[in-house]
Image (cartoon, rainbow, N blue to C red; front, side):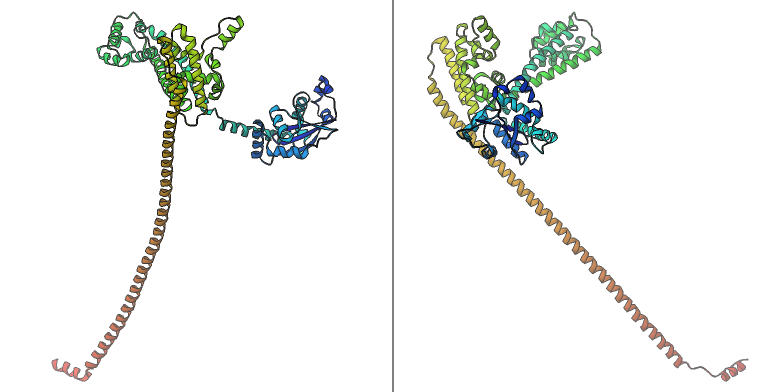
Amino acid sequence: MVLLHVLFEHAAGYALFAVKEMEEIGMLLPQVEDSVLNIGKLNNILKLAAFFPFKSAQAALENINAISEGVVHADLKLFLETNLPPGGKKKKVLLGVSDSKIGATLQEEIGVSIQTGGVVAELMRGIRLHFHSLVKGLTDQAASKAQLGLGHSYSRAKVKFNVNRADNMIIQSIALLDQLDKDINTFSMRVREWYGYHFPELIKIVSDNTTYCRLARLIGNRKELSEESLAALEEVVMDSAKAQAILDASRSSMGMDISPIDLINIESFSSRVVSLAEYRLELQEYLRSKMGQVAPNLAALIGEVVGARLISHAGSLTNLAKYPASTVQILGAEKALFRALKTRGNTPKYGLIFHSTFIGRAAAKNKGRISRYLANKCTIASRIDCFSEVPTSVFGDKLRDQVEERLSFYETGETPRKNLDVMKEAVIEAGEVAAEIKRKLEKKEKKRKKREKRKLEALANAEEEDGGVNNAETNGEEHEETEADIVVKKKKKKHTEEEVTNGTEMKKKKKKLSEVVEAELVEEPPQPEKKKRKHRSGNS
């Protein structure tokens, strides 16, 4: 007797379903496959044995990451060991899973028989459709929210810890560089055709597209050119003979006259093309620096642009490192390869590496041999770049020297050095360079830590000074208030003393005045009235 259990991983948790007795042959019939879509019929086929909900979003993310990598999480192992029935002689326990990778790991960890595909795939389809109905307490809205939240967290973590995130910048840069080349070429042809109506002789004199656009912007109306414009023309074309030829051609040109509004549009469009050409140079410099950081050996061996194209075509530096040399040799010539296999013709000798200078310098009979040798060295360089801890271009320079020696061997017969000797020298030099780079990085880290420490100390001192100033201001205010109070008190006291003094003086003055009046009254007594009458009568 076989007991089939199905493990279903959901954003809400793990679910274990027990499948009722059924025939596998009958399950695969089309009618039964259609019955999985009906919840009533699905309940007759299986039932929920156990459900383990995730405690948090972080726990759900950890479990889904482990499943995607084919690793059995501790929660999953505990859940299965607790709820799976023990197998015996009469009944055999079979666990159905959707992913064969996690199934193989479960078989090693738990020791249970695993089944994938067939019946299990049909059951998974039904469970996935009706999961919210099979688990009690779980609504469709809650299940959708859990799936959306876990999906965002999982995608964010994948993007954050993507090992190819440095390669992606190179892939986008080389794609943009190729697109810019096409666009600049198309726009330059448009400027040549447009401005050629007015000055057709300039096309034959100047062949470079960017220089032509600069001249179209500088010259404008050809009738305004004079000997004074010769210095500006020489600055653009970097050739006095060409500048003089342009000046002479403008005087005897057969082009038609052009209106000012048309000339403004041509100059504006020429400025746009020139700015695109300048941006292309900046982008190429950025690509060169990025290749020096990500794949310095490959860039030193075959060049930044060709190396970036190889990485872009392979998808990442890791994928390129996994390719054999025979694949790297014809990378980019897949159509020619399959056409040759189909027609039983000669297979291509080279793909993207044809743009390297080595194959162009080789003789026709040696192009296939040198391309094979170059592909071998490119594979070695890409593997060193992919798996080395400290990026250096030592191995790339040595490999380039080996290709040069092989090229001269094909031409002159001079015996090149052995690969073992060259690699021994490269290992010694790479060790010295890596030690120097590590020393510089440690020195930078120490300087950074010192700067941070100084900043923290400066902030702490500033906070202390601010606190001291605030305390001083508070104490000063209290001190000022105290002094003001003392002054007020002194004024009040003085005023009181003055009032008291004034009152005492007034009393003294009143007392003295009264004494003087009394004294005067005592010294001058009043005379009798009779004598006065006599004196009056005698006088009369």
